[in-house]
Amino acid sequence: MALSRGLRCCQRVFSWIPVLIIAAVMLWSYYAYVFELCLFTLTNTLEKVAYLLVFHVCFVMFSWTYWKSIFTPPASPCKKFQLSYSDKQRYEFEERPDAQKQILVEIAKKLPIFSRAHSGAIRFCDRCQVLKPDRCHHCSVCETCVLKMDHHCPWVNNCVGFANYKFFLLFLAYSMVYCVFIAATVFQYFLKFWVRDLPNGPAKFHVLFLMFVALMFFVSLMFLFGYHCWLVSKNRSTLEAFTAPVFVSGPDRNGFNVGLRRNLQQVFGEDRRLWFIPVFTGQGNGHYFPLKNRSSESHNPLLANEDLWEESDDGSEGSLVEDHDPSVTIEMEE
Image (cartoon, rainbow, N blue to C red; front, side, top):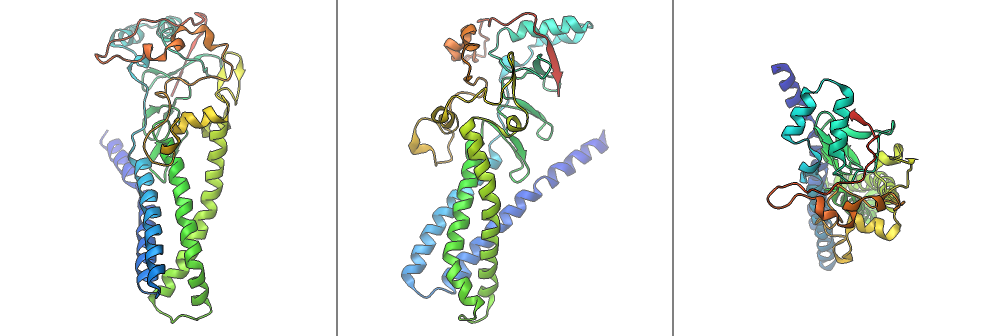
């Protein structure tokens, strides 16, 4: 037990190494640009002020979105999807697998769940003891089920999902803007140092490496950001792009694709003035997502008002029952 705890502690410490690397590059780039380039190399005062002003705007947005991506906790299923104490006791003391499945079927009748496991069973996480909402997956690193999980990103040491997907996208976007601005403004001085029009000194090393690092990061970020823009336009997560979600009618990669405008609004919200600000503006609560094929939703009375099945302020449970097929089985997943 002590060895397991020690290994887990070491894993948590080492998981911060990629974040520390990014933070170190950010701090070095700040010093190299502000001090070595703007204060020690530039001679035009107006150019200095303009460069420093725009740079700090880019740096603040870059840092803000990175912070939000790292420290926004992953959203987990609410209590409605967890086994109650009585249900858990019934489930654990029941030795017959068929009877266990039936217990979970009864619980699933109250929830708006449309996705299935590949076997056609309703998805259940044996570790978290929850029925998985649509698009929810268990992260073995975070050791919890994450709503609309996209992937676990080591560079932010966090799960990217419903709670912070907008922040992650903005982090990629502002990282690219940061790199492009640095490369564009450093380029002429990069050439001057390269052809020795400017005297050698500490600034030369920093300016040359600023150019190379900015271009290197920009190229890698461009492909990653472009890929996630495509995912947003199709309303898919990274996991769903590799493995299509399964519904009663079978696998469908476009099952949650409800059109470009509504896909964007699910992530960024309806107020376009807040799209580029790292505050949460996404639609819904991560437990239910509109389907492309709305015929399956028409059989669910809960979706006429999805707030009815959410937890009330006093923590009481709703009483609405969904018209699920009682013959559906449960598959336990980790």
